[in-house]
Image 1 (cartoon, rainbow, N blue to C red):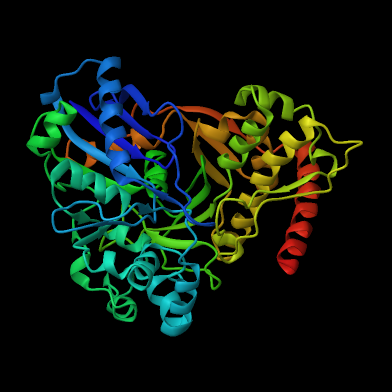
Image 2 (image 1 turned 120 degrees about the vertical axis):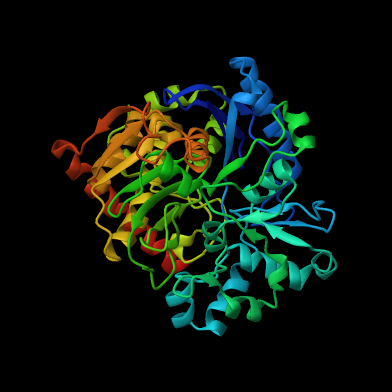
Length: 494
């Protein structure tokens, strides 16, 4: 039996074909080969065409088939992982009304700040476990206030993964986990927040029907099946945002376990069995994939927008160089990069900074001492320090994290990055041969009832374990202390 997983990212679409009987991933594909464009019609805005995601799903499926020929009838389920916090608006004919407002768009920051004050911090933190912030609900309110002609035509609003499910099945659906990531969900009430909808003047009919995270969410329509060359009626059996899905893909499901990723953005995501929150809403709590009536499972997430995108920006500035060569060159500079500091906050409002858009900053640059290697290292260390800053917030919330799991991908391909992270955060890092698309395929196998959660991770291997090194800890502790002092100055003057 086969299962297909799709990971709908802002840079590319990934697809994976899983052989559920062996637990092996038979093929993976990524489309397009170059990063998908992000539209920036105004400073601090970020949009993408949802139909381009669908086209790349089609392309990735074709690439998957070229790598490994398979009988479509043997595909027993489809799983979807997706970039979180986006907003897609469709009309009654299920046609997209405007470009999607994606996760790193900052236009609704002030909208969410007003809602936090008007609804009351006590209500927002105890019921939503977050400030409405810059999340999907606030983006929808922004549409209401600034594009009323669009708002009047909206039939349904959805997250990016909901839109792909719509294209696959023809049905508008969502999940509780998805509603929570949009700050629509009242945790103690276990329902959509009527107070939030009333304040934002959102008609509850705009929200899609709720389906389970694991289970039948719809079936592949004849049109979609023909486009993808898959069998009509194939069920969609799993859906989750990219960070809950990344945690699931790494078998991070129980309290005390944590997952991390460092792609375009960087994330630490820890599972907790209590409804908890940060009073400044710098890190955020959502419903985890395995939450149920008997067992509270929330995911506490810190996000650093400027992660892989900072490294890719530097690569574009340098010119003809591979990431592997960048990693090798960065390792030639000493820990701390000889006092050169980078604050990688150049990709929209940063939640860990209270939704401030400070822009990226380079500090301590000395033209007589610093060379290319220092800058390459300072960028990687700056990303690590930003992640550790968020991790400090989570620690203050009572989440003790001493071991993390990550996929062997993106920034975690860099030995220097792994070393800096393990020693700055004083955590053990385990690297696995998995990614978001494989996680979505495994989720589909669980949702179809073919495998249990305990069975579905066979075939996944731990490739490396990185432990803190006492000989390096002091170097990174001192470098992080200097970076933290610089950040405090940056925020005080911002």
